[in-house]
Length: 466
Ligand code: 5GP
Ligand code: SF4
Ligand code: MG
Image 1: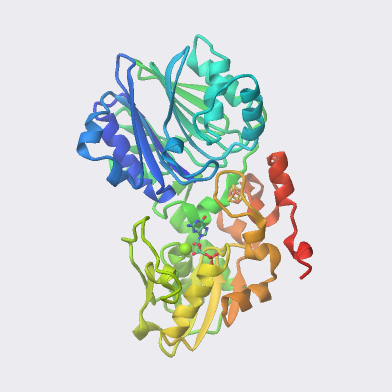
Image 2: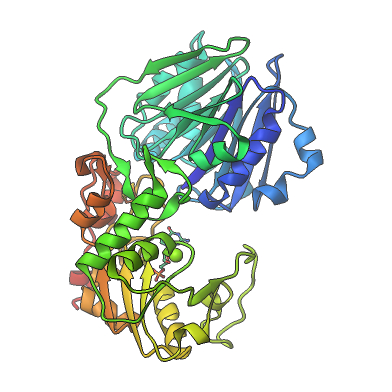
């Protein structure tokens, strides 16, 4: 998961990229960066670790002149958490200086990298994204857009990306559409963003999705957008987890309002997994909209029985075992007056390892809840994601090794209910086949790389002889 933003032909490009990234901060808090280009083809870049607002002080933004800019907020997926892996990645090639930002994960990056290294390429980062730039450097063309397309036709997996060259800004999206990417318009200046909430902040109009397999180029000095197509079959495999968890509820995603989709998930959850209880309490923030849907459908009132502290820094140091449930308490605090003596339905979007959910259930019980019924607005997460979401390996996914009753016992809830896959897909309006559901089904429609396939095939349930 990452957020990307780009704009061409605007006097305030770097500032607007900063604001766009600010709106996309939820898609990655590890590092951020902006590359800007002026009309003479000079590119400048600034990257740093941390939040967008921490990195881009006024004096930093002043070092990014020009009318074109691209930016990135990073959440580490492929590659480790170091500043060398922060994006934009900038390289000098025979086609001039290039800057690239990427959301998604390339499934054949390791194989390609091995081949490239064997024939002499020297990589600067451990990120899969850099492979695209090396492939471009190996296949220089007079037109940078051609070179990018040649490179993109060799990579597999998920990419929504933006490339800034000395005289062109390019947006491209893979043929499956795993990750979102939108085209917008700010007073005639074309812009691109992972989610529409970035356009809303800028006052830009959302024009449309960048289509699957589409490459859009904006040349320096021309207001016209050129649209090209990557070779190969378009096979829609959009990530439903974006709707479940990642995207901001005020965004339009894959043509639908995230807020509405999440409410429908919650309502469907209430139909499939009702609970005899007094109150619905959403686990903020991710469970809020599903909680609202659950409440409306079930007729149970929704109350904020958990309050979230939004100011938790990335660098917060937890004391050792000395304070119980500390990790979760710095983020969520129960409201005793709401919870005490009540039967509570806790609504959250997903369970990954189960450890946070267990702490939350305990916390709610310690605040006096009579019963705690946990309801999850997606099916059990059983398989890792190879398309840009940072899920742990199979061994760490509680639902890969435990059945629902075992998970219920682990999280110490009185009852546990998950939304069915059919129920989940009924909440999104496009046909179910057009979505990726691999983290619930193991149906990887774009095959992961060799090592990853081996990892995915692990069945810890059998191995551990449980
Ligand atoms: P668990 O009980 O598995 O430890 O944690 C469940 C919580 O993790 C849920 O509230 C869910 O919203 C959140 N969650 C699900 N996927 C992700 C993710 O990829 N990253 C982060 N930071 N949280 C996640
Ligand atoms: Fe999204 Fe899950 Fe598919 Fe990954 S595996 S792209 S998280 S639906
Ligand atoms: Mg959550």
